[in-house]
Length: 358
Image 1: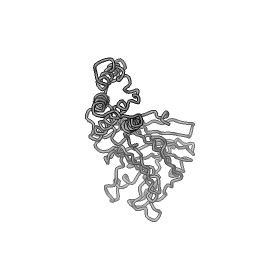
Image 2: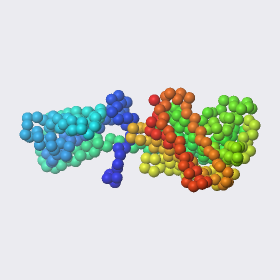
Image 3: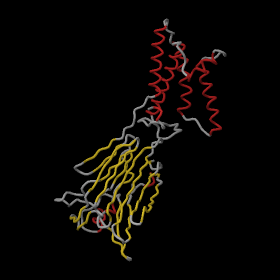
Image 4: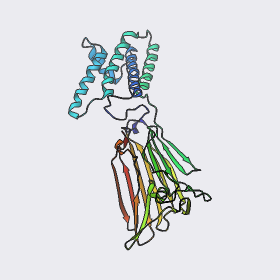
C-alpha cells in the first residue's frame, strides 16, 4: 500500500505554502516535536548497539575515523547535501534547516545520557522502542478528512473540508408546491467559502417590494448557476428553471432528476440533473469537483453538459458572483466550452489554486 503513495498527505497543521518562514504556531510546534521524536529514535537505535539506520550509518562510520560526534557528522552531511541542491535549483525551507539541527542535537543527547543495555534482550527491546519512536516522529499526522452532508429536507448538499473550504450546492426542490412565496430560480446554485469568508456567493435578498430588484433577486441571474436560452432568427428567449410571477408567486418549477456524490482519493465530487429546461434540451447535467492541493489552495471544477432538442440555436450563460471585496481574492479562472456534436454542449468553469482569501 505504501508504494502507491505519490504525494505528501495534508494535515490540519500543515503550512499553506512551501518555504514559509512565518508558520502558524501549530505548524512550528509539530515540526519541532516530530523532528525531536525522530532524532530521539535514531539516537536510541545507535545506543542499543543492534545496528544503525540508513539515516545515521554513514555518520557513525565517519565518526569512527575522525574526532567528531555522530550528531556533528550528521549535521555536516546534511549541509553537504544542501550544497548539492544548488545545481538542482532547489532551496531549503524552515523544515529542512530544523531537520538538520534538531536531529543532530537529539542523537548526541541520546548517546551522552542514555546508557547501553547490559544484555542482548534489553538491547533488542530498546531497538524496537527506537523504531516505534522514529515511526511516530516521521508520521506525526492526522489525515484531513473532508465531510459530505446531504440535507434532504432542504435539498442542499454541503462539502466541508478540514482546510477551511466549504461549498453549498442546491440540488433539491426549488420550493414547496403549497408555498412558492419565497421560492427562487436557484436550481443548481452554489456558494463557496474560505474560513467563513465568502468567495463565490449569490446576491441574496434586499427587498420584498414588487419591482425590478425583487424580480432580479429571485431570478437565476442573481445566483451561481447556468441559464439556457433559445435563439430564433434575431430573437433570444432565456428560460428560468422557476417561472417567476410577481413578487411571491411562481408557475412552472423544475424538478431534480438525478443526484449522486462521493469521495475519490482526495477529490469530493457530485453530479445532478434537473428538468428545468426540458423544452430546450433532453437533459442538463452538472458536475462539481473539489480538491485541495499540496499548497492548501482549492481546485474547483464545475461542468455543465446538455443536449439540445430543437434545431434552433441554444445559448447558455453562467453566472458567478464574487464577493464584494474583490481585492482580497486572487483568481485565475477560465470559462470555456466545446461542442461534442451539433446539439450537445459542454461548459466548464475551472478555478485554479490561485483562488484564495488573502
